[in-house]
Image 1 (spheres, rainbow over the protein chains, first blue to last red):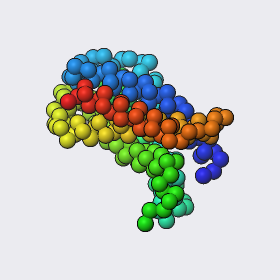
Image 2 (cartoon, rainbow over the protein chains, first blue to last red):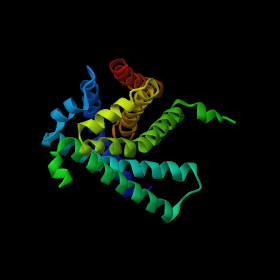
Image 3 (spheres, chains in turn green, red):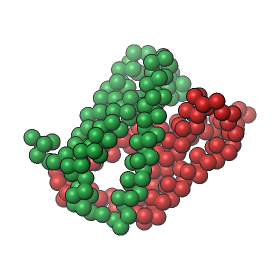
Image 4 (cartoon, rainbow over the protein chains, first blue to last red):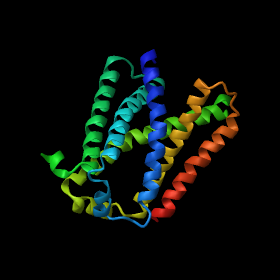
Length: 115
Length: 113
């Protein structure tokens, strides 16, 4: 692993340690009593702090997960080189795109997201 | 054949860390796609929640929660080893990581089942 990937992996891990702790606490709080989707969205929509939090979360995940997968694939399989890096860069883009869309869907007003 | 080094706690920790990470990497795009359904309104999400309200899915969700908590705990162990001047007691550290992971998973399952 190159130095820059190593630093990116560790720095994103440090941010994610905090973010995952908040996320797990939120999950455990939110599922108490079995909320409906409507009740969940009524609480989350237009919560800009949580939107900013999950945008940061998605950014860090999009850095952390592809680098981790790269290490695993390079050590456990014969797949190396440029093609692996291209596929994992595309995976990072997939996480970014779907992650931002999910954060917007949950935390922004629907008219802002849909247009 | 299993090598002697594969029975070392550090190896087991690294293996669990990686397997949990792979599970999360597979799960994440699906999770994001499901949450994006909120764009279609609460009705879509409620239908999705109803379809997935089965014991098998709940158990799988619990597994993902365990994977997330375990991956984080084992990742904190890696960061501590690499960046802090600590001499690790490997077996105790890994036991604590496993306990934390399964405790969070249990709390989740007790709330959804």
